[in-house]
Length: 362
Image (spheres, helix red, strand yellow):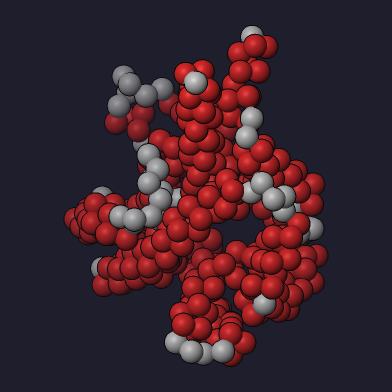
């Protein structure tokens, strides 16, 4: 067994570039685990600066000074975020509050409908077991509600931290964009000389993730807008809230669409019951999801991340289990990183095998 592991290690990491890539990955993971919370504002600033670098580069190619282009892009980004907070956020907050107020009524009607099932299907459903299951569900929901309330009160303490984010993060984004080349040169000086595979992985990641992020932003806007308009035209309550949720659900492929269908169906069922209006809405919603999966996604991501659906779902579950919401949010980019690293090591292993074979033949 030790010989098998030793041969595998020599095949994969005998080259200094491969060993350097492994060390850098381990150091990055340890840094996130140990100092992740402390470095959270820096990580957020790096991610946003990476996203905003594309328009800054385009302005630079048009002859606009780097400092001026950075100032324009950052101001537009802050203005857009402020506009969303002032226009869209109050509507979502109001509809979300109203939905929470009606949740007990929806739950009571659901309980009434469920408790009628033993009468409709006496030979199939046991009323006693159903009552026990419903009571257990009620207890769990009450406990969850108490945890949410406790978390809400504890989060109020972090208001100062949120305000710091609003001040520090834009400043860091501005300087990261303005002094991009200088900062990259400083980071490059800290890296070992044997970094050919690091550059290879970085180049592959940069190409795929730029395409992925650009496509996801467009997909969120199209799906969210189309769903909101369709729900509003059909006079579904909480149309904006549900439309935004459907738009954001595309961040988590397959799982997001399945999860967000539940509140859409519950709200429609509570509003109309099992009437034709309910089925019309679900058909329209299904058409939007079908067009998204079979038309929009292939058009937007034809040159982006090429990951099998099974790998995407595993990445969402794995990274979500490690880092919660942010792990889910960055699951596909992280899966792309794993794929790029695997490709780099596989190519290096093939090169090493060819060298060994050539040496033996010589």
